[in-house]
Image (cartoon, rainbow, N blue to C red; front, side, top):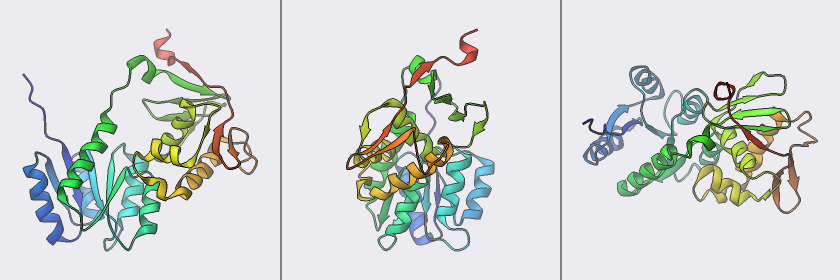
Length: 246
């Protein structure tokens, strides 16, 4: 019988007075914790092992947490929880926009952080129905693979897409031709009370439009609904990947 391996966490914070006691607490809660005192140290750690989740301080000397967060979102499929100060509301907004899964404001109660860690991990590990999850989304000549998180344009070229953009596009594809207001989109994309940051959705929609619209200034696929939010103005079908149809 194979025992469950502990959840691996990479804790990145330049303040040892916070990092070391928090690492000890998380270890007592059953997590396997690796510590890094800077973004550079975190990048070195990531060469050695792959964590299940990253706890990432925003304000650090040298490369800051937002820069490292962007790197993690763009290059690795890793959940990220930001550790932020009360004076950093703009940084929290940016962190959510680039795809961070959650944030906790310092000083925080360690038990709350553990609850948020487990909530984020549950969302990341949620197992969908196999057939539904492997089926490609096809719309307006585009296709998106939900397992590999690949977006293919009508000419067959792969288009780079961030984790945040993937989540937003999937929310639209799961609800074609439905009006989705900002609160609902933020809830589906971020999974928390991110409705405080309405413009986060507007910025994500703008970036997504630049990738899938012929003219992002006159969008035809993702339309703005006055006073309502946004709507995917396209029919969506699900189809098995080519390897499954042979």
